[in-house]
Length: 225
Image 1 (spheres, rainbow, N blue to C red):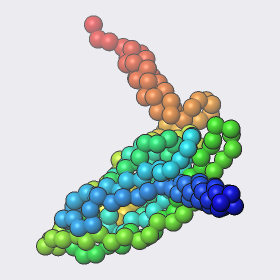
Image 2: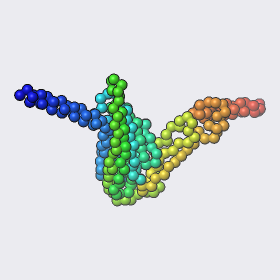
Image 3: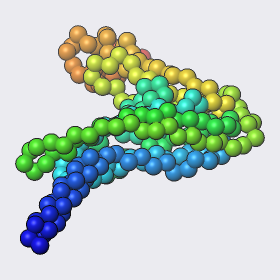
Image 4: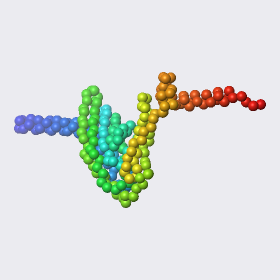
C-alpha cells in the first residue's frame, strides 16, 4: 500500500508539471474576425487579444489583407502596402478595421505572424511566437461600382527626418493606389532648414515671417495725404 500511495503522489506531481508546461506554451495572441460574409463596402473588425500571460507583456503582430480592402487608419497601426503591423503592451485587445471592396467574391486574408514576451515578477522572461492561418471573407452584392469613388486613409503625421509620407487608397471597384505628399515642401523644410530649427516649426516660422515682411513692406509704401 505504501508503494501504491507513493506512485499516486508521483503521478499527481507529473500531471501538475505537465499542466504547468501546457499553461506556459499556451501564451498566445488570439485572433477573431467579426464576420466572414459581408456586403459591398461593409467593414469588418479583426481583434487581437493576449492570452495566458502571467505578468507584464509586450507583443507584435502582422498580417496581409487582400487587394481592394482598405485598412482604416488608427493610432499605432503600421501599414506597408497590403500588410499591416501593430505593437501592443498590456492586456487590452487591439481592434483592426478593414473596409470591403465594392466587388463581390471570395477574398483570402493571408496568414500572418505574432510574437509575445511575458516579463515575470522575478525579471525572467517567457517568449512565444506563431503564425495565423488564412481565412476567407465572402463579399456579396451586385458588383456595381464607381471607379472614380476613392476612399483614402488619413495622412500620417510627419516625423522628424521624413521627407514625405504616404497613404493607401481604394476605389469602389477594388483598385488600390498609394498617394504621397512632401512633409512641408521646399519652402518650409529646405529653405528654412539652415536656421537649424525643428522641421515641424519651419512652416509656422515661414508663414509668420512672410506676414511680418508683408507688414513691413506695406508700411514702406508712401501714403497719399
